[in-house]
Image 1 (tube, rainbow, N blue to C red):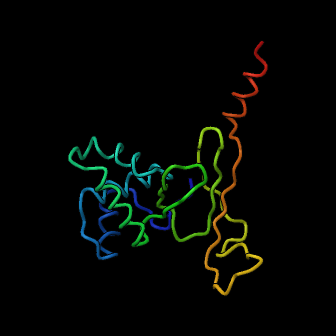
Image 2: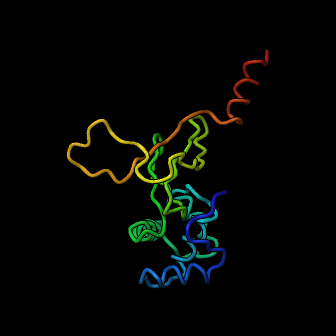
Length: 156
């Protein structure tokens, strides 16, 4: 797994990151950051389910507000993918990487950009805009899904 630009392995690290962005440190924010760091490409519902055992009073609405705040402050990246009902979040920020998504099971993985700097693609017409980012999503079928399909087709 690629390391994010902010290497945080303990709650204390997230506390420093939140303070550096002048954000109030709360158990909920620390839990969300830690969960997203260890479970990249999670949506708000998965984050809610993941932190709820440790924080039983947290609400779904609170998680939505927290990821909105954290992505707005640049602590997590909001990722919108085709065929995904909701946005996904990751702590891998400050680099130019893309994603590959299985069209069968929905698995998402990071893909390093071969160019590196942003934007790595140029549109045929900018319509007068200064392009700062290009988002690329590769879509395919993962090995597990591909193997499962071929095994089913071979079974009489």
